[in-house]
Image (cartoon, rainbow, N blue to C red; front, side, top):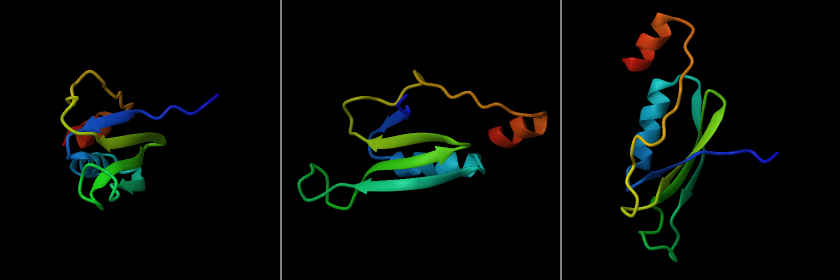
Length: 91
């Protein structure tokens, strides 16, 4: 069975979003950063994708541009063992 990696589409602020997720969830890390090349529509070296992992789940953040807006149409459920865990996540 192939692995499924949710892709989150951003308009240039994928790095900011990933840094936020990593600050909220302590068991997280960046796996790989892909950058635009000379052949791309953006400046070479600018971040295109960021692969990251949060509590064992891998995600891909894509700086795809303004064609599609990031919406609450996707949600992630976070299992917490205690109210302290919930409070820490919200804080």
